Length: 248
Length: 332
Image 1 (cartoon, rainbow over the protein chains, first blue to last red):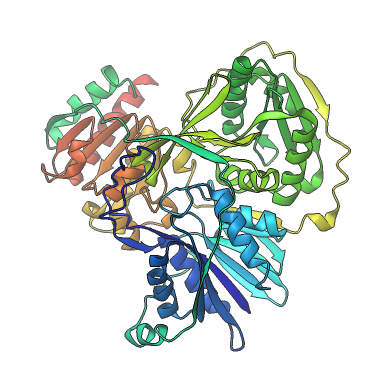
Image 2 (image 1 turned 120 degrees about the vertical axis):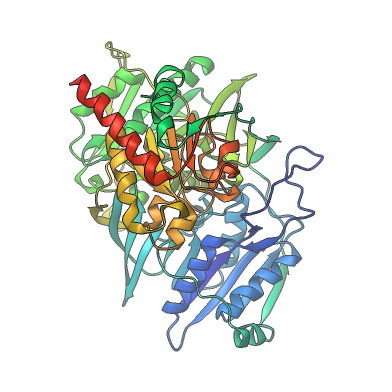
């Protein structure tokens, strides 16, 4: 199978986010960057469907530094990388989807993988958008994925349980936690990754469909109180929940 | 560009999900600002009779597509249906619930319209005639105010974020209109959902729960989550978990609250044996009331909690369950 994985470079989830002087974007000076955690499931899944005569291509949109995250994916076992290079990645998912879709049109893949969510902008949108632009079937939040012949069978996470579905190839999925255990890069993998092909293509972004007016921190929560110590504090807790919070 | 607001209802097993009423209620409020109509779109199988209910939640007009092919989620067919409704009624905003389906469907619609997409919004306002949406990013570490530059704006609204909708006894006098001339061909519906398996023992999804009892590493093992299950049952709530508990294999991943799990905003969140790492806090900080039960008085979770008890959760939680059951029994 020819598999393409769309990868995003995001701030580590432990990062304390700061806002830059424009007031509309994050300050990325001290940010540690990682492969989007949900994309690790996508890379791992693609590798299991590659087969003996297939390949796994990593496609990413981002600044030049994103080659580091692409190399990580290559060290996990992917075959080649393509970086669609921009100065700064867009926060508008439609721009991202349009740029990825036009690159994907030339790749003739069987299977297309996305993480279900970028842990930065939390849009969960690029996978379904790309599928819609390319007019291919896609299911999101996938936790089980099997391919037989020209048909894929899928379980997807939804509220209160799992939906079971299927779709013809070529198709896409967005990968949810639970699909697999991410395959971490091995030392030989890291050595090999250095020699794998990685193409850098500068791209122009289409116009943005969104304008960020303001980025701010959520208001601090009002200070709380310790109602007591140990099980003896339970009656007091119930009292405040009933009388102050009015939630019981 | 028109001033109508389209609200795309969500139907499962032939019933409207409560998020449908939230977005119709919100659509009505927006329509009152823009001077247009709140138009509900209901697509499902065997739903024509029930559709009039949406009028009680504020829909001026209800567009119905009643087709057995929509018994389950059918993303391509739904996309075409919403696009057709948008073409006819020329909305300035198309509202979806930010449910699993809504978050899958709304990007498809936005991509086809080449319109701005605003995901998981917690507040919508019309300012000088233009929509401005507030939404969290970085799992709630920051808030964004965003304006769409292209219309119609495609918006998903976070469940429970915009306040409880009110059902009025009187219907808005809405007209039910059948959407019949779509000519959807089977070949267009490539993605097929064929079934649903309910998760064991889960009554309500975390994102829609009013009360959550969550456990972390302090639970010491998967078998001890039964004391949280008991407390959740006494409160009519749902059990959640920290990433630590999920990574240790104690709970399924769908229980995870935090930046790489779910973002929740219940009325009451009880964190048991959870230290309060930034990753976890990001997913639950908008809960209206947070109770922390932890042995370590220095745990960061106490900095966030509305109420805290410093103590061993294995003493405190069963006692809390017991007292709550007594109250419940006394009420009966």
